Amino acid sequence: MTAPYVTHADLGGSTGHGEIADEPEDQVFHHGWEARALALTLAAGAPGGWNIDMSRSARETLPNYPDLSYYEIWTAALEALVVEHGLVSSAELADGHAASAGDAARRILTVDQVATVLERGGPSDRPPSGPARFSVGDRVTTRPGSVDHHTRLPGYAAGREGTIERVHGAHVFPDTNARGLGEQPQWLYTVVFDATDLWPDAVEGQRVSIDAWESYLAPAPGVRS
Image (cartoon, rainbow, N blue to C red; front, side, top):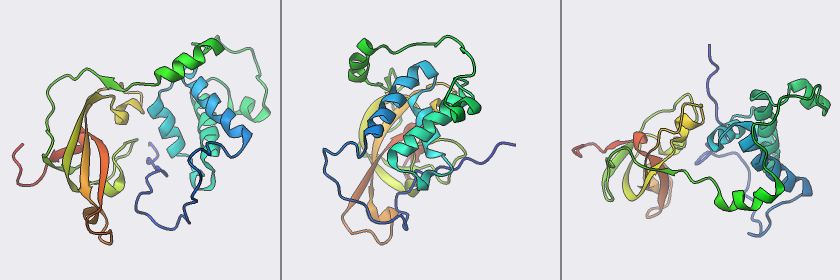
């Protein structure tokens, strides 16, 4: 039996997490080791064999997520990924030393490649397999309820009615990509909601927008598909 999927990152609209610290925009790291945590995570992705959605899923499902700082989350998720993908064992990770020479790396990111790879990033746009179902201005309803896997549909926006504001083209579908089921690209939209439709105590006139993949959406009630 598979354990239920529990994500700790979907916190929008929930309370009890303390005050948000206002920090300077140019303060990227608080400690020197945080830069190394970021570099290790980026460098290990390609040789490790996981993608960005798998990496996000690993971070968001850490059982002690609420107790960790931002880059402690990155480090703990990287440790989970290298063990899950067989790069090191839990014993080697705890010991800090390799027990054997191990297998040859699937791919090595060399120093001279780093700048080019970072500049290229990880584009997720893909050729569409068919026409978009929705257009700008369409009224839509998001998928209700939760799912037992990684998703980019926030819980606070599930089962709510909004308006298509922008069509972004087809992009890698994170729900399948995070589970190793392939990219399965879908049309991606910006959907805008009245804040009061998400939270009854929100300020009138405020709006909230999310990026939503096509399978998250259905025509709003009364709108012909």
